[in-house]
Each structure stands twice: as structure tokens, then as C-alpha cells.
Image 1: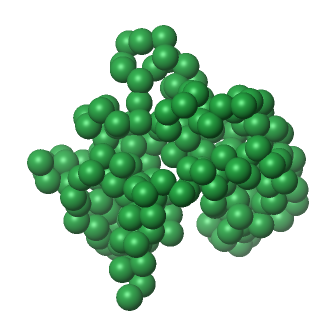
Image 2: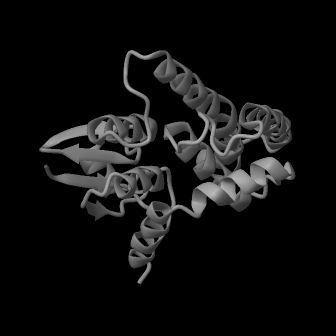
Length: 202
């Protein structure tokens, strides 16, 4: 099988890179930035990441991560099980409430045309983000990962968001969540993805 990932590592493409490394898969990387001509050449919306799989295209970082998890049997419960339904619910929580707050703030900082930006929205996004982090902490409880002992798709998405939050200066003070983020990002697959990302800056 042949994988080509389109998207710059300083975007949600890092999620796909991380899962490809978790799955032990080789891939070609085209480090296209969002809305670039190169990104649009592969995905008319200009959004990244996009994954070419045997000549066919899959878009959206969460869809790509779950596809790879399913295809290679890593980081996921089996489709059709109660555990998978619970896992998918956690993934949706992370995407809607953590990623959503960060993306809202980002849009009003540099994505939207300047005339449409509302700087005050960032404060609302911070409140929503803080509430979501409190819920994330509650979901974790004393577990290592959201589903228990095993790292899975919502952990990958959540810990990527925690790194994004740090870059966006959305402070996370909950010690349980901070430790969780460090635990996820200490995984060898994430370190390999970082090394691959560094090659794009060389």
C-alpha cells in the first residue's frame, strides 16, 4: 500500500503523521500549508491534511487518523463494539470542545479576513477551553489514557490539541491533564513524527 500525506507538520497534519508512525507505516510527505496552491492541487478546499491511499483521497485529520487506526489495528476499539462507541464519543468531545475552542480563537486571530475578526471572541474561547479541560480531567480520572490503559485515537487528538494550546498561549494548569499530555507526547511514535517534521525545516 502507498501513502502520501499532504499537509505541513505545523498543522493538523501532525496528527496523521503521528498515527502513521504508530501504525509503523512508511509514507511520502508533501508539506503543503493550508490554502496554498499545492494544497489546493490535492484538495480543492485547500484544507490539510489529505491522505492519498492507493490513488484515492481521504480528507480531515480525524477521519484520516481513525481510518489508519482501523486499517492497521492500532489505537482503536473494534467497530461495532460498545467500547468503540465510547471511544467515538470521546473523540467527538475532544473535537467539538477542545479543538473547537482553539480553532475559534485561531480564526479570529489570523485565519479570517481582518475585517471579520472579533478579538473578544478569544476570551470566550478561553472559557470554553478551560471548561473542556476540566471535563477531560474528569474523564481521565486515575487512568493513564481516556479509555483506560491503552492509548487510542481520542488520546492522539487530545494531546495534539494540548500542544496546540501551549503554542496559542492557552494555559493548562490541571496537573492531571499536564501529565497526561506529557505521557502521550513521550510515545516513540510521536518522537519519530517530530523527527520527520524537523526534516521539513532542514
